[in-house]
Length: 218
Image (cartoon, rainbow, N blue to C red):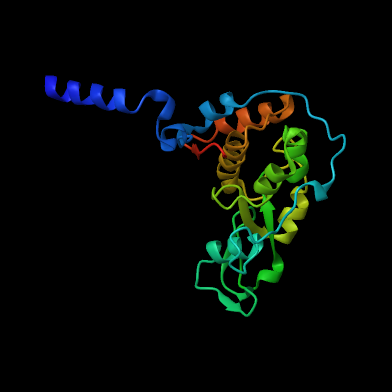
């Protein structure tokens, strides 16, 4: 045991805390019960002042592989191998829109929904971000909950509303939706207003063992 302690001390002397590996500073993933995760959200009044959709540049090709963020989501969420034509044009696949329980095989009927809409993100803290961070938010492929392929009809019904004013028409989807919403807000450190927090708390109370997993955004 002493030899192990001595070895550890030697390593600490050789590599002081100020030069710790970058990995030690990476944000760790968290998994929490939904009700507990809701209580972690910070509360603040919201303001839409100055919002423009163009403040969030999207659908970009961040990894320069020829596929936009929209295409990347369609490829990732298709339940069958998608048919992809030149220029990363997705022409067929199979997608399940969990908001309304609809299955589609043609991508034209799908929207890629920002789980927390761009306008809501702006209201909740993104108005203070740099353009680069807003672009990262609008094209977040590193968290499965951030972007979701759903029917255009359900997405446009949702628009920029939060759970106090809109929830999925399919009742069985609402716990998943609440968890996805909370995970996205925690990941990006976005606040909630009072009505939104009340709605999320009420949803969580009826969602049993629903959990939230998220990793803070870089």
